[in-house]
Image 1 (cartoon, helix red, strand yellow):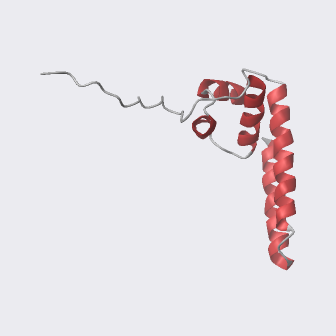
Image 2 (cartoon, rainbow, N blue to C red):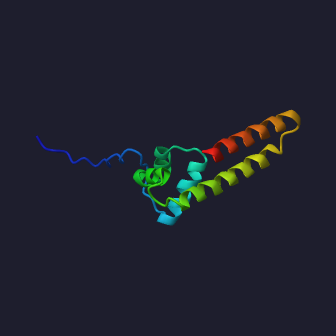
Image 3 (tube, rainbow, N blue to C red):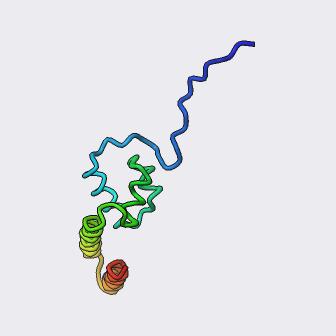
Length: 112
């Protein structure tokens, strides 16, 4: 019996879908932005290929303990402004209710 050579590529490790081609600085900003948008660490790793241990260490405050929270706050403010701007296309009560929800979400995130 001859052994067939398996030409299939192995599955990537859990949490990864691709190679990461970003510098550590870029990875820091990417993780902060995704985290500000409430995207799970495993999903961040899957989307951009950043090491999940690095992502979890940033979120836990083990790496870049001073800088990472400032970046997350910056991206949360940007998200807040973007959502408020998008709400301007609505009119009347719908706009008011959406803006109230956006404001409440932002306050809840800031209080974390």
